[in-house]
Amino acid sequence: MRNPATLAYLAVLIGVFGHSTSEFVSVLTGVSGPEVSVWRYVLGGAGLLLFALARRRTRNFWRPLIDKPVATMLLSVFGIGMPMLLFHWALDYATVIQVATLTTTIPIWVAVTNAVVNRQPLGAGKIFTGIAAFLGIVVLLTNGYLERLAGDDDQLFGLFLGLACAATGSAYSVLVKPMILEYGGIRVMALNTVIGALSLWLVVGAAWGIWVDPTTLFDRPAEQALALATIGIWNTTIGMLLWFWGLAAVPDIARGSYLFFLKPVIAATLSLVFLSQPVSWLQFVAIGVICGSVALEFFWPRIAGRRKQEAV
Image 1 (cartoon, rainbow, N blue to C red):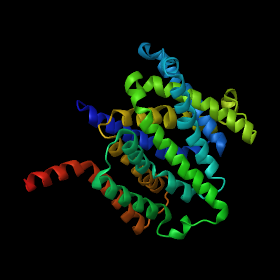
Image 2 (image 1 turned 30 degrees about the vertical axis):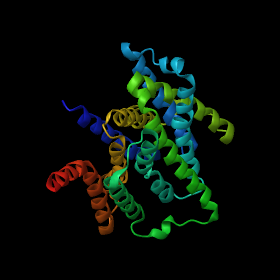
Image 3 (image 1 turned 90 degrees about the horizontal axis):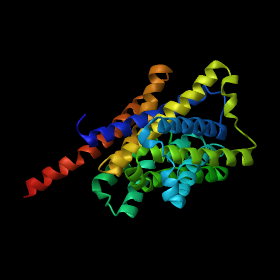
């Protein structure tokens, strides 16, 4: 594939697919809550570390930490460890549908953060397609029963955590881009994920009393061990590397992040094919709205260009 932009967008899409399949794999792990996050990042970080060490050009993966220690530590702890902790913590207070809906606002947060940090205007196209895709996701996840999004006072804290998860993860996507362009995606992601996994391991151990021991991986039943290895290597090592590298390489990071809107669509398709879970006609309409909004965002530059030519 000769077009670097197309390759970068494809990497983002594969990364989204990795995110979309994590919920299915996590069910088979035999663990839940914050413990899943620790296993995922410890194994995923180990995979990224081994991959970096296997390549001569990336063996000095610690270089960003030496050159920019403060930025590296902040990005690792607050950009890698914190979003995953907030996600699972939110599930202790809010429903899965509520948290899932809030986390799918990531593309919107990326666009806003990019506009603030890099002074790149949002534009009418991004605003329209973003709102349309988000409304489609709300219908897809609730199947039209919008009262499922409503919560009592006890759930407000969970909603705040879910929103904070989306905001911090999105900010990381934008802020880490210069470092990835300077040092390469493998170096940066290996280093950030290892440090983030260590911080997550310490926080979950201290706060929840769950001290994950990676050496016990193969003491578990074969199905659980395979599921943990899958969520670590496929969903994290490969998925995260492609997602963040792709976002750093695409010409328009906001447009690239809009592919994340497809996550619930992919999840719904997998549920239909592999779990035989029915999809209602309203959800099919919502899928069409989401896919149409994402497609419109990608074709918007051409549409806008034609309008300018016709105006001239």
